[in-house]
Amino acid sequence: MPTGTYNLIDQPCVPVRWKPGSTTSGDDALPDLVGLRELMVRSHDIESLAVADAPAHAALLRVLYALTAKVADLTDQGSEGDWDERRLDVLDTGQFLPSRVDAYFEQYKERFFLFAPGGRPWMQDPRLAKQCDAANTAGVNKLIVTRPSGNNHSWFRHDTDTAPELPSAPEAFLSLLVWHYYGPSGRCSSREVNGVKTASATAGPLRTALSYHPEGDSLFETLLAGLVPPEDSVNGQEDLCPWEQEDLPDPDHPPRQAMGPRSRHTGRSQHALLLLPDETSTHVRDAFITWAYRGERMPREDDYLIWQTSQQGNRYPRPADAGRALWRDLDALLLQHPPAGSAHPQQPRVFRTADQVSEDLRVRALGFDQEGQAKDTQFIDASTPTVLGYAENNDPRTVPAVGRLRQFGELYGRRLDRAVKRAWAAYVRDAKADGATWAAEAGARYWPRAEAEFWARFRLLDRTGDVADGGFDPAATRRAFLRLAEEAYDTVTAPVTRTLRGAKAVSQARIDLYGGTPKTKAAVPAPRAKTKEPTT
Image (cartoon, rainbow, N blue to C red; front, side, top):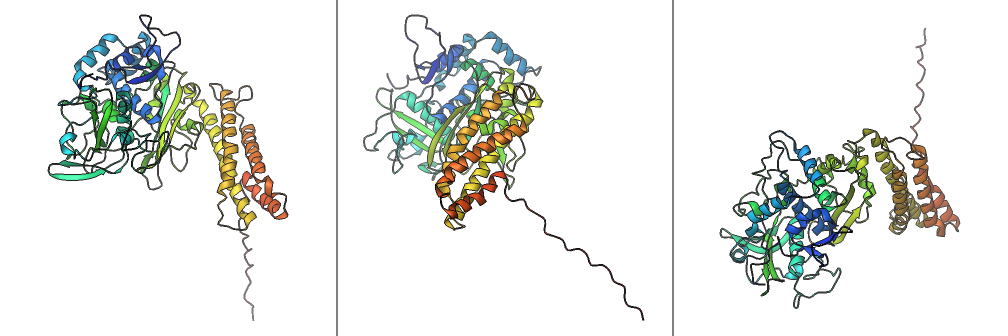
């Protein structure tokens, strides 16, 4: 394959999972990888994306949402403000019109080449070939985030920078997306612009964050449900993705302002990349990875994140935490005003209207448990049962049950953690002992069972939020989670209760499971009776 012919429109680059019963026009087997054109045209036959790496999956969904809005003519509210009705009209057709898909890709065909010497490769900056030192490339191991590079630890495999295995074009395509959305801050390859050379990048817009996506029975349904209604002020002709822009961005100027959902979700990268193909243009032999804007950071705006507020009043996305199960975020996804806490969570904007597509939608959580700079810990990929029918805008009476179910589960998880730590400190007679080992074991016993308890009670809720067949009963729910905490506490602390000191420590700390010792007000001395001055 000559250089400049690998076009993402037609070349197989996206892994998919087909719906049962889907067939091809001939006797050929259904492909595991498809190009963007086939993905959009046959999205009703595709069950879901089959992207193994969660951050790549989340990044690709945002690109596909932008393509969906364009081919479905849903880039603005329209002259009559009928965006919601037009989306339902597309849903009723059962598929994206092949003619509109073909027209879009024909218009931007030259911008979808993964390798385009002398042109504009997709989501890349060809100027890096001259602005970066050719002897200071990143290497393919750094491009593929699941590989070790430099002194970083190995995740899934061992690789060496001296003899790297060249990644295929589809693998490089997905890794390109990961860098645009999850790239780290810190030192990168030097880039010289207007005579000034710098080598410092800002973290990508989704780094450390967990994003949430509605998911249907087909990719077609998933993409329509994942669209965010554009604001009334959005002009669809101005809300452009990076590959639709006439000119490349100026790295010496502030980043381009987002003009709507499409540019907001595809044009916020803080990194600039350029892939270097091998002789056959089927693999990548090297890459430039550097900063996109000098000293400038775009506002973190995204409609698929739970936004929280710090004590200092700063807004930030709920971080990805590999140790936190998805059910603990459910009330912040279904409720417009989740139960108030110190973080004041805000519902992702996409869930305000996703249930208009279907009430039988699941929620898919995708993210990367990582730090702002180089440290990466674990991918996060989790999904719920069909839950969008319980969204607040369907029936506000579900609000108390959904919110309090989660609150009860977390309440006794926190109390259990505090109780076992207090018991350990009392047992070893060291107030500074943190009891991390006991806390970890107690959490491992409690949280999986609490999750099962949560979903068991959640499934019994009817759409009115009332008690149905033993559904949400606050007193019974409280007792159920308390019982799980008690059982975990007793199991973890049992080994030390054979001694008098251990039994006393465990017995005294157990009260934390019930909220601790009640605080009593200090006794107020009775006022003295006034005495009259003696008379003479």
